[in-house]
Image 1 (cartoon, rainbow, N blue to C red):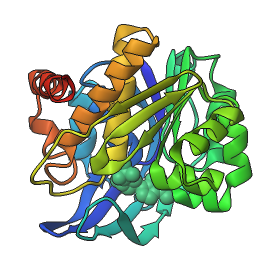
Image 2 (tube, rainbow, N blue to C red):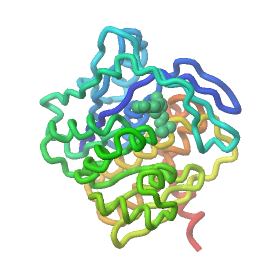
Image 3 (cartoon, helix red, strand yellow):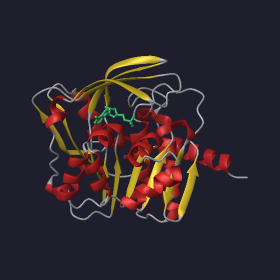
Image 4 (cartoon, rainbow, N blue to C red):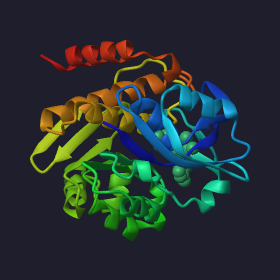
Length: 299
Ligand code: AMP
């Protein structure tokens, strides 16, 4: 089944302990779409400026991502610049130049309105809510956010959560949103706002899936070398939602499997900058790591 994603499309300038890239393809919708398209059809809604390299548009099209919802407008593409310190779990933002993204009002094409799976990638929660007003009741709504929106748009985010089935956040964000540092208490609070499940990402420490009567802990695939964690969260979400949409189910076991798929796709993404590693990844590589994780956690 198809997935509709609305999010950022960016040119990222990134410094990590092992290298640097200037104006590399990034953005929450980009990473998500590429990752989800290992499993399902993706329809992308976002905006870029007239300076956005055509080769990126061609790459997305070649990948089979539906870009009918990609607006190309006069002006400069959104740019984000950040760096990572030693443990690579936390990004430091240096610059956020919204450019054409600053005036972005998602317009969901008529042909996208009945898409069964909707992923609201990290954008202003006011816009995320506006997307939900434009679509017909989807089968599943999954959303992501970031510290900025918890800081400046908390009420809107809490409103959004009423209409979200599965919320994906990292451990710092869930603590910031709920004021709880205990992950169980924090997750219960988020569930009380509306979602049936929350997935808490913990960087290199894996992810947990928490529901009213569900707790599942998944490891991150162990990597001795990683080069750029940018997009780890979005590619995790891409693997997670992409898999769910491909099997058309959302029972407990399926959700658990989806978490592992998310972890595996993210593990490939962080092995290189931008989409460089994912472009070389095949479905068979994903299955291989999935099996390795299965062995790692059984006793
Ligand atoms: P993550 O998966 O959390 O590492 O997301 C990384 C991506 O988020 C980068 O490619 C950035 O372009 C994008 N990003 C950074 N800041 C924002 C923002 N304020 N709104 C939307 N996307 C952003």
